[in-house]
Length: 248
Ligand code: RET
Image (cartoon, rainbow, N blue to C red):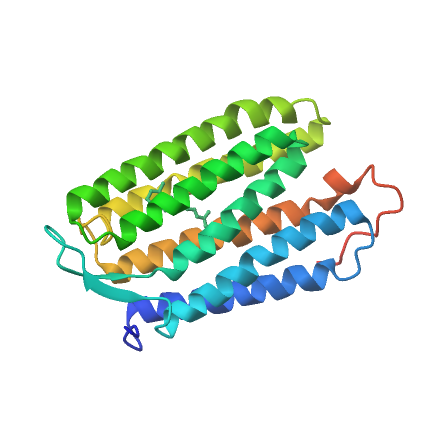
């Protein structure tokens, strides 16, 4: 077990991440509590689980359970890996995609393809993170994972956007904003990974890397969720008898 040193940038980022995610989950839960319209509830159920899962993942990393240290082989040496992030991403990234797909009224095959690519991306990413065969093999895993990300983002941009263009102007525009947020933020993950300690380039250390991932995670989960749920009138407008918007 490798407990991040109390007071270090790593430890601070993880504790702040955990509290921020926990508070966001509670806020979304609070806002969604009185919702009765099933379609609206669907977005709340999905979106509440995203920060809730992240909160426990961050807690596990801050307390030393979600982190391992091992000899990663040639070009790497002793390496500290926060494996709990991948457990978090494995569940939360498909949930975020599901939100986008619901909003775009995507067909089932598009949903399966996106979720499949996403699980493939996180799966190959964790293989790279836990690889002990040295830096070259890690870079190969990274390239495979990044390939899946690029195809996934292309599908968001093409297929899903095409399906969203048939929606009302308001809904299509909200979809466009959320989609751009996803494309912009998700592309930064492989960059941090390869330039940081996982890829072995070590342009910055584990402290900076942990802080950068924390900022990205909060933006990609809480920023995304808040924007989606705040725009409830856009997707709940045609749902009969939908509850009044929550007080913010
Ligand atoms: C990894 C491994 C290296 C290659 C790629 C990766 C992509 C990760 C992504 C994560 C997104 C996480 C989100 C979390 C919070 O909500 C796994 C770093 C491509 C895109 C959005």
